[in-house]
Image (cartoon, rainbow, N blue to C red; front, side, top):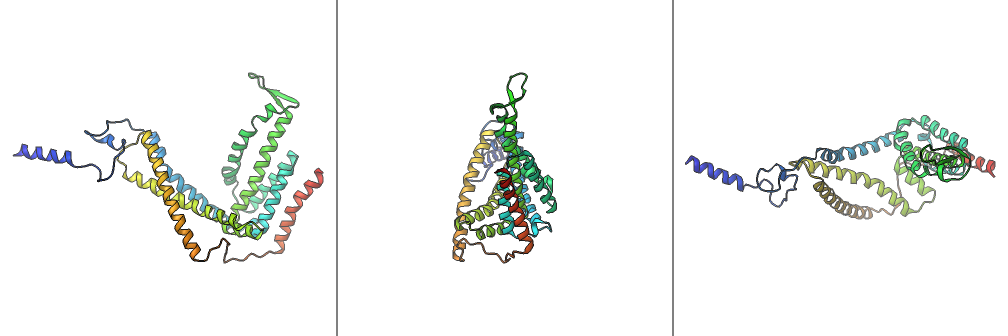
Length: 316
C-alpha cells in the first residue's frame, strides 16, 4: 500500500502543472525543472542584473525630474523673474552665443551662465552631469575631425599616423563645442528655474502656436506616465520570474513589453484627451498664477538684449 501511495503521489506531482493555465513559460523559467521542458541552461547573471536594474533607473529619472521642480521653487535670482522675461532673455543670450566669433567672448558668456547658476542656487554638479558632459561627448565626436581636416597653419602632428593638426581646425572645434555648451547651459537654466507650465504659458504669451504648446505639454506629462508604467511592468515581471533568462528570452521580453507599453499608452492618451475635451480644453494654458512684469524684469530683459546688440556692433 505504501508503495502504491508513493507511486500515486509521484504521478500526481508529475501531472501537476508548475505554471498557471494559459501561461507559457520562457526557456529561462524552464531551466529549474528537473524533467520535461527545456534543458538546463547556464544562468546569465550579468545580463539579468542589467535587465532588473531598469526599474530603478526609471525611478531615478522620476526623482531627478522632481528635484528639478524643487529647484524652480527656490529663492534665487532667476526664480524671481517673470517667466516671459526669462524666456525672451534666454533666447537672446542663445542668439548671442551663436553670433560670437571670439573664443574669449564665448568663455565670458559661459562664465555668465555659471554666475547665473550660482546666483539661482543651481548646483554646478547638476549642470555638469545633466548638460556639460553630455554636450561635450556629443559635440566632441562631431568636432573631432576638424583639427585634422580643416586646412591652415600646422601646429602639431600625430607621431604614428602623421596627421597634421591645424590652428584653424582647433579654433573650429573650439567654436562648435563652446557655442553648444553655452547655449545648452542657458537653456538648462531656464528649465531648472521655471516650472514647465509657466514655460508653456510664457511661450503662448510670446506668440508660439497653440498646437506646439499643447504637444510639448502633453509630451512632458506623459514622459513620466510612460516611465512609471514601464517601471511597474518590469517590477511585476521580476516578481513572477522563476529563473534567469537567456539573452534570446530577454530580447523577446523587451520586445513584448514595448508592445504592451505602447498599447497602454495609446489607450490612456485617447481616454485622457477625450476627458480634457469634455472639460473644455482647447490647447490654451490656464494657470491660477498670473504673470506680473515688474521693473526688475524689464532691467533683466534689457541687459539680455544688450549682449547680442553689443556683439553685433563690435563684429560688423
